[in-house]
Every structure is written in C-alpha cells, then in structure tokens.
Length: 291
Ligand code: R5P
Image 1: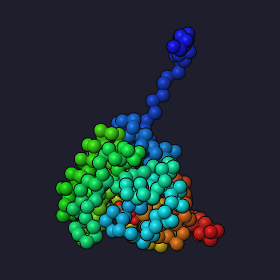
Image 2 (image 1 turned 45 degrees about the vertical axis):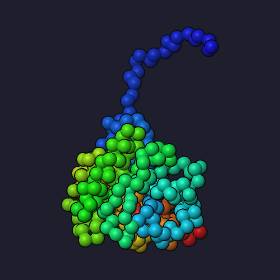
Image 3 (image 1 turned 60 degrees about the vertical axis):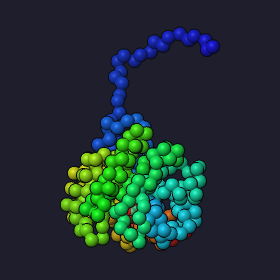
Image 4 (image 1 turned 90 degrees about the horizontal axis):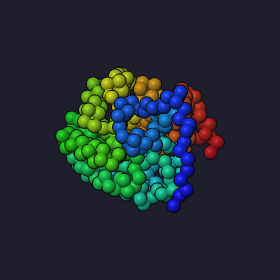
C-alpha cells in the first residue's frame, strides 16, 4: 500500500495551459493515436517526410534494385523517415530493431500480367496493428477499369484504420493510357481526401502542381515514378515541396540511382532543409565520390 502523500498546491494559476495545434494540414481533428502515428511518418519539425518506397514486388516481382532487399535497402533504410513495403518483406527481411515508421502496402491482387486496377484489400487491419504499422497504403485507380472497387478498398481501410488509430495513405494510380494533368490529379487527390484518406501520394507535374496540393485538404507526398537522372529527380522533389507537398515517397529514383545512399541523403536535404537542386546534386556527387 503506497503512503498517502500531501495534496499538491502549485497550480500556476497565472499560466494558461497551452493546447498544441497539430502540425499537419487537415489533421487536427484526428484522434491521439492517428496523430502520433502521423508524427512518426512526418517530421514534426519540418512537417515533411522522406518515404522510401520498396513495395514494387507486390505486383511486379523482383524489380531492378530490389532483387536482394537485405543487401540494397537495409543499409540505406536508416536515412529514410519511413519505409513503405509489404508485410512479406517486412517480416522476412527487415529486422524488428528497425524503429523508423513503417507504411504497409495493404492492397494487391493482380500482377503486371493482368488488369492492375482489379485490386482488393490484402492486409487485415489487425495484422497492421500487430506489425506496429504507422499507416497502411492503398492504390486508388480514378478513371481505371475497377475505379469503384479501388475506392471501396480505400473507404473500407479508412473505416478499419479509424477503429484502430491507423492512418490510410491513398496512392493515386494512373493508367498508362491516362493523361497526367493537373485537372486529373486535382480530381483524384480530392476524391481520396473527401472519402477519408489521411494523406495522398501523387505524381508531380510541372504545370499546376500547386493547385493539386491547394485543393487537397490533407497532406500530399510526391510519388517518384520511373528512374530519371539524379539532378532531375532532385529538382522534381524540390519543386514539389516548394509547391506544397509535405514530402516525397520515392522508390526507383533512390534505389536505382548510381549511389542510393548518396541519393537518399540528398533527397533528405532537399525535403527537410529546402536545399536547392544544384546544391543537392553537388551533395549527391560529393557523397557518391567519397564512397
Ligand atoms: C505503385 O504504384 C507503388 O506504390 C510502388 O510500387 C511504389 O511506391 C512506386 O514508387 P516509385 O514510382 O517511386 O518507384
């Protein structure tokens, strides 16, 4: 039985209790667990994130650069704020002592041999909790053959995630036949946010990207896309965050770079320190040559 202690008297009546507003756009009304998980994905000091996407195998098998994730990715994973991957790779390759945020790929089904928009939910929210995921990610195919099904996958994950305090990242997937325009991305991102996504991953476009971020009420992270020269990828990341993105979710432009370790550090400086592209590229070359 603990001793009874005397009652406290220091109430600091002259000082008002501060109630912190949450740093992420559109996220102030979320519950504590959601906000805490989002704060593991997005750095509360900069409001931005560098997500390293390595989930490509869920529909296209051993992608170039991801043949041996233990050899290519684990050494650079500590430079990422967040790792985006499947539960199969998480359990089989990533050591549980890795404490950065995990965003779990939660949709799948078709391979590159079939219609990609025909996805279903591929992870139970209970397993995401068991894996201590900071968020789950789902592909949304606006305009695609299975548009409604993919939106429904997202809304079901939002319902499941809300019960457990796990945010949902909606990934706007663009069919090869579709035009990547500001109008399309405004439509796709807004639909995802309206229907409950806590943040959205979408592609950068040189014209009108600010209107995509402005019209989406929750944070947007920039998707990397196909490998392009390192200086161009750094320019794209810089422009995206200057035009309102809350960070990046890049895969091939990091792990297919000549020096993935140098690239992820240069992307980090671009995202978190607003390092202009020419300086970020110099940083990339310096780090690459030091190796
Ligand atoms: C597909 O759309 C997935 O989300 C990816 O596998 C991945 O996240 C794409 O990353 P990146 O285009 O930057 O290689």
